Amino acid sequence: MIKGLIITPPVLGRISIGKMVEKNGKRLPEKDDQFTITSQIHSKEGWVKHPLDEQLRAKTPNQKLRSIPVRMLFDDPDLNLRAEYTLFDRQTGRPVCIGDGETCQRRTGNGVEQHACPSPDLCPLAQGGQCKPYARLYVNLDEQDELGSFVLRTTGFNSIRTLTARLRYYHAAVNGLLSCLPLQLTLRGKSTSQSYGTPIYYVDLTLREGISLQQAIIAAKQLQQEALACGFQQESLDQIARQGYANAVFDRDEGDDGMRVVEEFYSKQEEDLSGVEISSNQAIQQIQQGLQQSVSKLN
Image 1 (cartoon, rainbow, N blue to C red):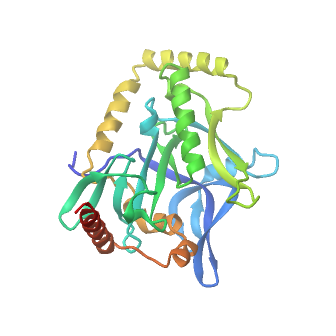
Image 2: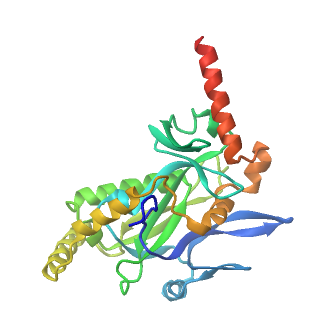
Image 3: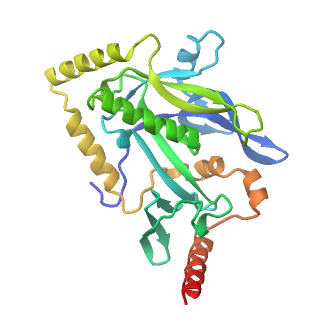
């Protein structure tokens, strides 16, 4: 295995609840009230839809894809959902700083350094919306490729908090057999004071329709026994995935997709409001200035 190269689940496509649109000469992210499943091919019109999108949409009453049957690849919740605070360089699409609220890895002129992570609200580098929670959920949709995945990327607090809770609750409820549960991604709407009554949509993870928790637990145990009988080793698969994530010197799994992720991550509207675009060099300068100010106050 090449050292320093993060090894993530093989990605067959993407799951999104929005798209990029052009308004007044600017490309802006536009939220949607349904899921869209795309391939990894990007054309002038946007991401090319995956055949599964049409297949699943045909089964819905109004062609609105608001639930997707999924299976988790791993039993460990943290292997299925990877979430950190992330600050991207908007010019290159590369992350500058990645943290978990306690510690962070930061790319500087001297290489990758480890620092304390006070969270975006308290970090001087993160002011102006520069740093956000960023999560990737890997799920299996096509059981013909049981080790392939579709990735859902989100920076929404509601989606990240809900997905984290669901994965951990289900993991505990079925005694760790998370990969054996029949689950589905569900799109939910809510209104908040910040949305001024306009519905915002977030992603939830539930049992498939018509299946109770008791039925799901029985089905999970049966599936585990069948997998063990044929020699499938879920525990070994989780361990290999864990090693693959840990193989990176600096956690980055977007590949050539970095700039498109940044395009969705930071909207032009946010840039207009903050009046700032940050680059790696600017980030390093801000870090140094913040440290100098802190030392001056102490003295």
